[in-house]
Image (cartoon, rainbow, N blue to C red; front, side, top):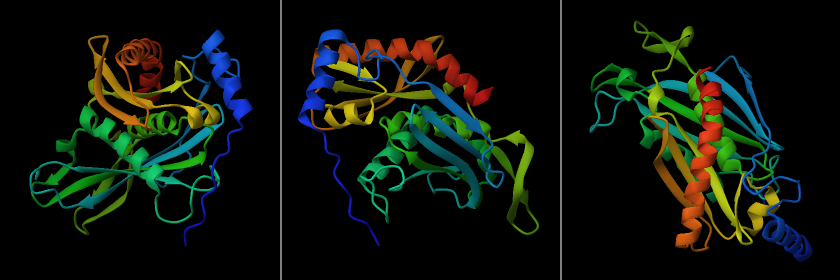
Length: 278
């Protein structure tokens, strides 16, 4: 049974305080600059029963991501390739805005944005997940669970997903019984390391473009744009984009977003790569 979702209430005085501080000083209520991310925390190996399981936290926003693999029949148009699926669960323990029951629109959108960023970049080598062409392949599942929502779940969940994939172990296939007998201790799933893509979500709050929004900033933002970027000989290349919320992105905003995304990618991508493959 689904519960009744409560609405996030933002007092007008708090909204004005957030916007005024950003517009006048480029600062936020927690002291960060508009382009500044919260401290990143990553914990590996939180479950031994999956191919990998990761906990990622930006400030108080916290997400679990797990990877598991199953045997599947390939799609007719790609008989020699494995398959991939992303799911997301937003439980009321993370926010009173989330329902109990079937995935809501926020969970579906989050899963799709992350799925697209990983899929379109070609990060997983699907051909190496083929067991017998046209008959049997591995299906990779990325399962995301929101533990606490204090803003910017998209980036936290996206980072957790790619780190979990980077740590994921290959299954041990029992051909005689046609089943999976646990996971290898040494062999990782096949990834195209050179096409690793990292997603950043930028919001328009007041008159400013803001990175890594808090829950309050997220609530009052006019629009958001999630950009997935990979490495192209040391320069960022865009692999996917997803706009959210009703506001319109004008040319000036878009130029600011692209410059900020490139700057933050240059700063953060080496750290992300180390977490994924290190």
